[in-house]
Length: 486
Image (cartoon, rainbow, N blue to C red; front, side, top):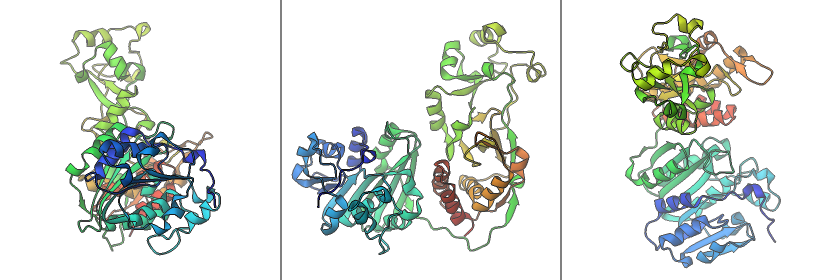
């Protein structure tokens, strides 16, 4: 039977620089036997050829019948459904690498849909048609590896939290000696807005059972991280433990919520990097800030993510000179500008009543940021930047007691639990454009379950927050409930 042509939505091709990094991460000499189950235009085939792997040791499969110039670099079979093709080829390959299609199985045409839905999951049951096509690809890829083999796939961000993939995620960390997940905060493909992860699993059948999750900013950072994976430590896969039913506590008892810095004239005080350079203002007379809710659509904000906003032209500086630099020539020139020249509106209430007028009162360094108005809802963006503050477009929070990093992320998980999110839905005020608003008092009144000791709270929160920020609140709450309430 001739397989139908793949839809255009499946044709998302891997950047060659990323393909080279992924191949290098799992390669062990040139004598390994490789499989690329969705070879497309051949980014991975080219990367293998550049590595010196003979074409006879590379097998490529693709549903698309259109030939690629890279087909000559491997033994390529086109116009064939990999899931059908793979039924009789288990345990043959040393490495499987690829970027499988991201398409709901229900959207496939028969016989593709029937074949995908009937792939047997790692629990012995058919996967069914509620999954996405990448998942049966990954299940089959694991089957096709020899003992000691390696796997590297580019997968959608949903692979970290989707219900249908839960059994596969568990199996992955039990099956391999080490599993690394590289999650990019920014899309890796120019024409796709969906976030993705790179999964690198090495040593099928190994005993170490090590795991490491790496969160990076963008494509270049992902490539750099993949290149140094073997030099980074990993840990044993953790288990959540806490048979005790959690106590509950008011938000106001664990943290102090306040608005960010009130400048009185944001056009004068809040600057981007280009403005700072044009005005020749030294960095020591400015404070790094977040000034928009879109800046905190992350599980955590660190120096790297702030730098990305800076490089993107966002307003990330608060002009706040101290007396030691107020008389510097460039600083004094800016302070002396008239309103017509872009200077400060010094007659405004907040400005004329402070001394000196240019010293915006700055709250203490926050542990986390919140946005009271968002169509997404309420979540914590943990502050992991040593100097970062915020303007009054955001709420900031400081934990009342000293907490370690794991404990901070555990409380962020508590905020995403279903019982707290239900309180938020009842308390928020929804506007016509879909935005919702919570006042600080309403946040303080929320009742949170006290989280147990969650050894992998950081990675669990990143998964839950990724689901939440992708719009899947139900899945985010399920992840948080599993960690905090059980």
